[in-house]
Image (cartoon, rainbow, N blue to C red; front, side, top):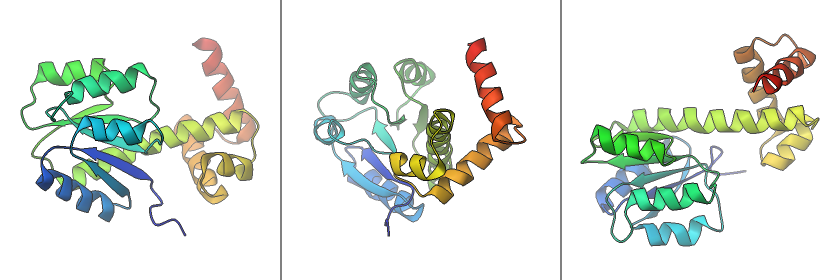
Amino acid sequence: ENPAPRGEIFVVDDDPGVRDTLSLVLTAGGYQVICFADGAALLSVARSRTPACILLDVHIPGKSGLDILKELHGEDYPAPIFMISGQGDIAMAVRAIKNGALDFIEKPFRGSEIVERLNEAIGARREREVLEQFTAGASNKEAGRTLGISPRTIEDHRANIMKKLGARNAADLIRIVMTAQRAS
């Protein structure tokens, strides 16, 4: 049985207290957490494995969090990246988002808020992956194998997608997706 059904989160912060707090909160939220004190340590692992998400502090030793963000974004890194900062301002948040951050979270933060925001981001990303598998003609079993999740979880994601898009059945879902793709 997978001990972390929701996936791995990489936490990058030079403050051990923040790392410990985030680790506790995210572990309680069902995630496996790997912490890093600086960007170099993150990059050495991130290049060979992709987490469900990265929480990256702006102010870390060596390359700044924004520099690491730019680097990963420039490589089309697939995991969503949340920037965190205790000295953030609107200009910094805008810069982070423009450079590929999914969101900007200010310290101090509530643990429940972090878990909720990560769940939403990861859930949306997973639903997109399931939708891609479905429109490519994969069965629930095949999609589950490809994405490393159970066919039952695939069914749940597909039900969520259908509800969000107002699809009555699988054929309706395909029609909606094809129409949207033609429009874009």
